[in-house]
Amino acid sequence: MKKIRGYGQRDKSWGIRDWHGVDHWIAGQFQFKDWNCGLRKDYYQNKIDVSGYIATKDGTIPIRDVEIDIIDDDDKLKTPLITTLQMNKTKRIILKQD
Image 1 (tube, one colour):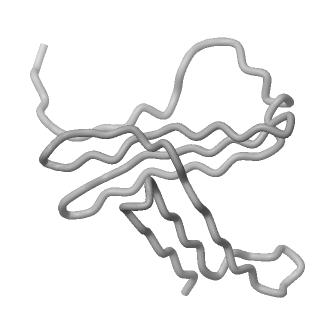
Image 2 (cartoon, one colour; image 1 turned 90 degrees about the horizontal axis):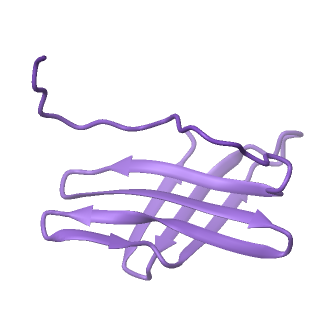
């Protein structure tokens, strides 16, 4: 067995899923020089569930609130042009379509 030191992402999990119980969701994993985060915002049965984390060299804190603003193109797919994510009112990410 060989030890490996590095970063990874778990993208699979086991268990029963009710994929029809979620109306829609927004999820993302972001890595920057000084911090990273993983978040998910699920919309289902007129409820919103937020989960995730913000990690820095000082530690990890849970994401309790995510505000999402999306500006769509006027094409038939409504392609997102600019997406702004504000997490815990402290971290902000702006994603722009080229």
